[in-house]
Image 1 (tube, rainbow, N blue to C red):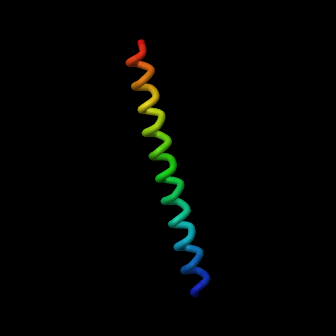
Image 2 (cartoon, rainbow, N blue to C red):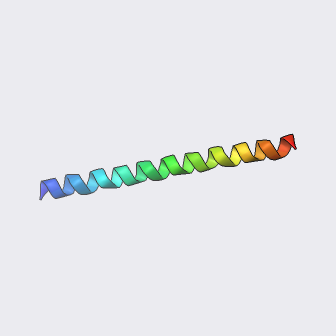
Length: 40
């Protein structure tokens, strides 16, 4: 029972971590493309 809870919580934390990383990566890419457009 407790092991299942820990597994669920850790997978939730892991997925949210991946989600946040993907979000920051997308923002970084957006910022870089905007800078590229400004150079042109």
